[in-house]
Image (tube, rainbow, N blue to C red; front, side, top):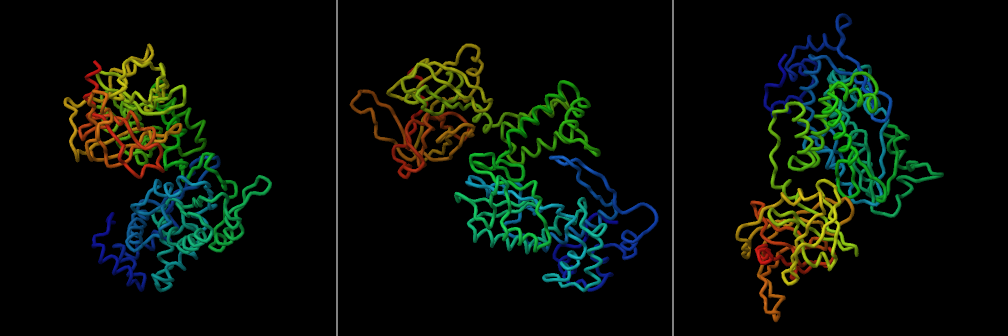
Length: 539
């Protein structure tokens, strides 16, 4: 049997829409009808499905019914055809091409309230009668014999099996009515709605959810009657044990991603991945696997430990991106264990830039940005130090907090160089490099990276902008000329001391003046950067 369809997509769609009998189904799937009969109705020999169980994250086991290879090929072909004709609703993210778990979580970020629902026994709730009905209704309108045959190809023991290639796309098609009603329901109740497989999420910027959505009574979270009614109408049931409401002051999570500020991998997931790599490196793969499976995945059918680790690192990459330092460090650890002679991923400009950044905290509570600069040390603005003899530096990439003292500063240029306390000098030996000339021109493209309006654990933010004009000299009358430039985007509070780099990641300037808050940053005049060559006057 051919692994893929040989016809082009347009012809496949035409033949699919024109199905009128069983033989045409076989022709569409490019297999003999007798083969389909053998796979579906044989009573002797090996069975068409293999059952096994995998442990669930929160206890219990999940039954997987995997089709044998020949039937799986048939289902993959049919799944491909169904995806050709499927147009998902805007609120559907799971099992959709070019839609991701990240996008599903991102629509619920920065919300006051997040409400999570899990549909119980999702795939097994979709019985063969519903699948037959789907194929007999609009837009398919297939004859009953065609609808029954297609449903029999896709179902096992009378339901959609978890493990068949056709189950995800069919579940989305079955849920189109549910998604439509829940979208309309969410709109009426001032919510955002999204579904990823059996995970349903509502979020809101309101102070409380409408009781139609959810309410709490005696400390118990209960779905609103209208919401429950819609779900039950579509023959699904709610897993009450997984129903939860979280406010923005609590840990909000959607499909495994933290969404309080933006969709991100939970820190606990990253810490656990680091621990797995540590145990593997120290005790060996077999011992590390035993530790992990006994603690987190008790049961049978566990995949190889190395694949679990690789999958976790791949997941981190899909969310944070391949250039993110967290992903690169984990990948380098993993590849180093698998192959000690492997060449680690090179340091990218993105990683180099972020790894050079520090949050500056003074005793008075003032917060700004600093950066490591090769051959100079830790550089920030003099006004960030604000006269403090000692400050605390928080190294974002490693999480370390280190005391630092002012080594040199020039109040007119508004630049200061800091020295770390004894024992941490190694941090001063690396960092960004300074452009040899440091000369800026109007319309130069630059990137500014720092910590605007910083709150604990916030990642650094990077902004691309252009040099817009040379600023009138604010030191006029002092007798010293300090060249400064404005930029065409606001520099928010907390970005003072941020490095301003060119396309080669060379430091061209330092951010010195900006808006106090995001709200009052309409005007960008006064958002100024000072060329880095002024540092040379301090050596």
